[in-house]
Figure 1 (cartoon, helix red, strand yellow):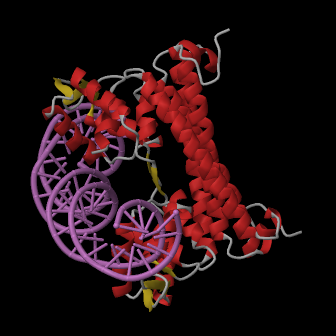
Figure 2 (cartoon, chains in turn blue, yellow, red, green):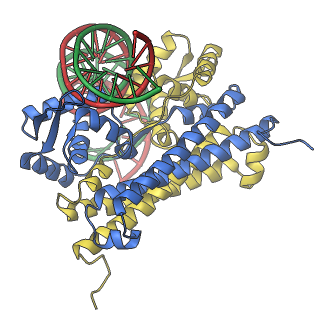
Figure 3 (cartoon, rainbow over the protein chains, first blue to last red):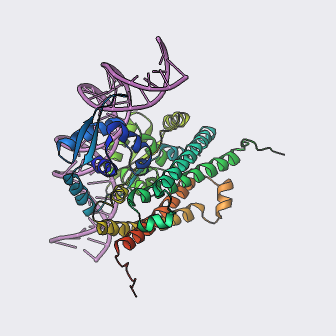
Length: 193
Length: 193
DNA sequence: TAGATCATGTAAGCTGTTACATGATTCT
DNA sequence: AGAATCATGTAACAGCTTACATGATCTA
C-alpha cells in the first residue's frame, strides 16, 4: 500500500476527478510519485469504498460528466498515521542511467542521442516547475511566501522537483558532451578546425 | 521487463554472486535502480536459463559456496538492443515528499523529525559516493579520468548519484528548518534569545 | 467528418514485495 | 553458545502495467 497516500496528498488542495488527477500526477506530483491513469481510477474507487475520500457527480453540459473527490476526515487521519511511521527510503528507476552504466560495452552514439533528447525534456520540465512556482506564490516573493503563506507543502515539493530536473539537465548535457568527445564525434555546431 | 537490464549492466564490471550483487545494488546501482535481494536471485536464474549470463560455482572453504555470473555475448546484444530504443522516462517514489506535500494538513513535527533523520542518511550516502569515485579514479584526477580512462560509465552514473544525494541533503535540511520556523519550534541548539 | 480531448472502466498478465525457510561459517 | 555474515531459495500476495473497450463533446 503506497499509491494511496500520494493520491490523498494530491487531493488535499481541491476537488479533482480521476482524469484531472492524472494530469496533476504528470506534473507536480511526478517529482515524488509515478502513476498511470488506470492506477488512479482504481485507487480512487478503493479509497471511496474505504471512506477515505468522498466523491460527487458533476453534471457538465459542455463535456462528459465527471466524478470529483475530496479527502474526508478519515482520509486525513490515514495521512496522519502514515506520517507517524518512518518513511520507506525513496526508490528510483531510470533506464537511461542503466544505458550510461553500460556505455563502455555498447554503442555510444545510441546513448548519446538519448541523453541529448532527454536533456530537452528536462529543460521543459524545469520551465514547467518554474511556472507552477510563480503561480503558487502569486504576488509574493519566495521568501515571503515561504515564511507565511499557505499551503506551503506543494511549494516545497515543487522546489525539490525543479532542482531535480535542473540537475538532470546538467548531467544529461555534460555526459552527452563527454561521451561525444571520447568517441571523437563532433557535437552539433562544433567544428574540428 | 526492466530489472534484467539493470542486472546485466551491473554485472558488466566483473563476476558477482547474487549476494554480492545485492550489496552493489544497495550502493552504486541504487542511484538509478532499486531491487531487493530476492528479485536479484530470481532474475539471475532467469537470465542464466535465457543464456544472457553464465554462472559458475565457486567452492569456498572459509564460507558457504557461491555461484558467480558473467554477461555472455548474447547478454551484451540484449543491452545493445535495449539502448537502441528510447528509454522510458524515469520513475521516482518518495514517501517523505508525500508527507511534505500534505504537511499543511497534518502534524508538522512528525514530518520534521523524518526530514532531519533522512538528511543524515543522505549525508552518509554522499560520503559513500565520494569514496567510490575516489576509488574508481585511483591516482588520476577527475578531468584526466573522464578524458581517457575506462570504464567511464560507472563513474558517470556515480557522479549523478552523488549530486542527487547532495541535493537531497540540502532540501531535507532547509525544508526541516523552514517547517520548524513556521511551527515556532526551536531547532537543536537554537535559542530564542 | 476526422481527430483531439474529456471521462471512465474491465481484465489479463507481469513485476515486485514480504514472509518464511535453510544451512554454512565466523566472530565475540 | 549466540549473534552476525554469507549464501540461496520457495511461495503467497500485493501492486503495477498494458491492452482493450466505450462513449461524449469539441475543434479544425
